[in-house]
View (cartoon, helix red, strand yellow):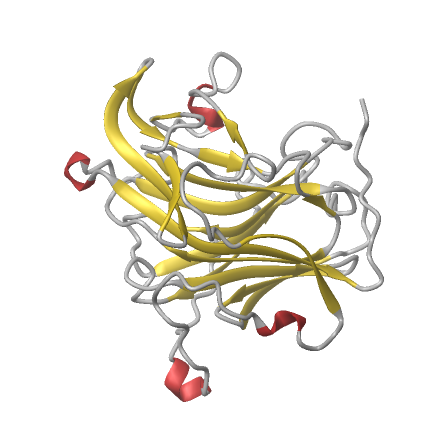
Length: 288
């Protein structure tokens, strides 16, 4: 994996650090007037996540994709506050060491499919990450209608990925038929920060017909460009939905093993916001 690490020395760059609590504060991304807020969850309530905005992927992926295709160790639950809840202004996704089904861990994988699907725009979330060897949280996107075929032909956008055995590094990645992890050709950018599990940070992409830019606290650190060479290189002209999850183990997350003493572990999400680029694009969602 070719990863470019950028040191986030904010004082030298003149960038202000974001506050460290769940506050759902104003985001400057829309201040230019070129973007319009079209979907959000500020998590200003208590209890289960808003069912009008979120659904769940449930189970261990078996029999078709046991371990969700990544050899993951968790069982994903639905409508279970032990694994997904809103409290103190934050969404909490919690991975726990407990038996469920054939798995020894539980967690949650929340999706906006058919409740929030977009072509182009700015997608951002402010989050504080879990920590410890074997943990694998992500903020990412998959296609809603899989128009160009199964993974990776219809694409994947990883807005944020983090693995616990690399506690100071965060990654943004694109997968397509030509560029993907199975071929070790995925297009990845990385950024260094020593406070990923101690403070809240903003993770975002800005996506249009020409490119996908990846941001960390407003700093652009990676760009994937449309080469105009077909859908095997750029399938990103269809609607995608958002996924928030905390995996345990897996081919990447569990590469150095799993420290069972760290659990429970939580990813805290202050907000999720989607801004449409003006003029608004029309999502092409299959009605089948």
